[in-house]
Figure 1 (cartoon, rainbow, N blue to C red):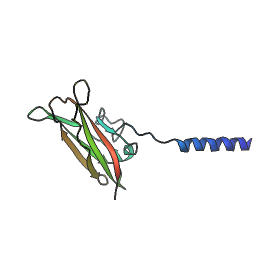
Figure 2 (cartoon, one colour):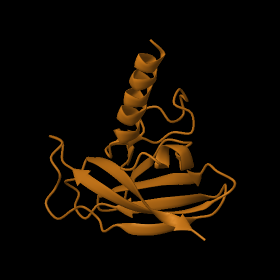
Figure 3 (cartoon, rainbow, N blue to C red):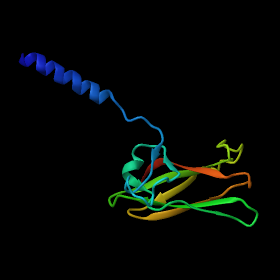
Figure 4 (spheres, rainbow, N blue to C red):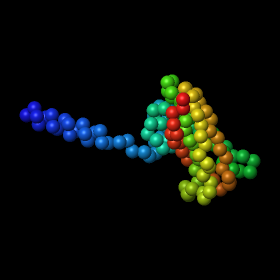
Length: 143
């Protein structure tokens, strides 16, 4: 009986070790139940960013003089023992939610030191943009 339990334990350990965290879209908030960050349109593309990056306040949205959408968001390094480097991009969409052709901004690289908040801001290229999605991906741990 002991050998059977040992074999089952080894099989379970192998199965768990083979599982990896899938990359995908994760919501960035300092506290998942925070009313300030609820409905945030910031999407994390790497699972590890959940631990290191926070969006404490909602995205500030405005329009410029010619009617183009402008956004600004604070991205905070949540940890006090490592610097991080991320890339941020905005996808601009129309009323139907379709990404406007050629409207996605370039990936902007941002270094964020320990417990620092940096502000990412961008303006849409056309006044047709009415919706947005801010995407953040992990680049590297800064030294």
